[in-house]
Image (cartoon, rainbow, N blue to C red; front, side, top):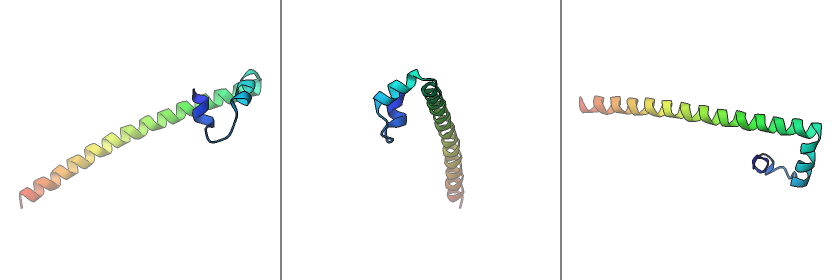
Length: 72
């Protein structure tokens, strides 16, 4: 499943991928791909968290501007 994600644009065939999995170099390659996938997932989670915080800040600032306009 993840192989398709990682190798989609690279042109690596599944035959090579399956063969590589059985060698020690192939196993290291698979482990590195797993590590990079986990890293990407962590980065996406961080971006979502930052996005939520920024969204709250913007809503709060917009509310303050609207309050200031109402008091003018």
